[in-house]
Image (cartoon, rainbow, N blue to C red; front, side, top):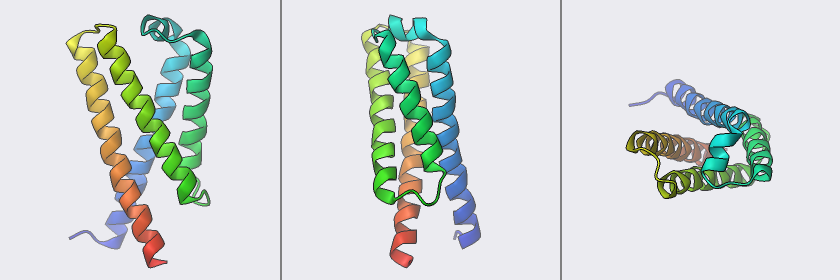
Length: 126
């Protein structure tokens, strides 16, 4: 049985992982423009993608941000991850790269589900 302290710690670890992963992903996208081009994305998309990931990652860590905004951030991150997986599949990337993106997607979705449940428990108990 999880104690409230343990739940709170896991909540912030999961939320921190999501934010850290998206910040790293934004950095990688910004510094590896050739990889995005190889996947078929235009250069201007990199600016949009990096900006959205940074803003979303920062907003997730601010407790005062409404749950509605956070839901949209989670949805955007999910769409970005699914799009990345599809792009890697369509560009005939190696199995190892596709597996890496798939594992990243599963980790992010798992963390988002945990954080989402905890946030809605907090709202119900408030």
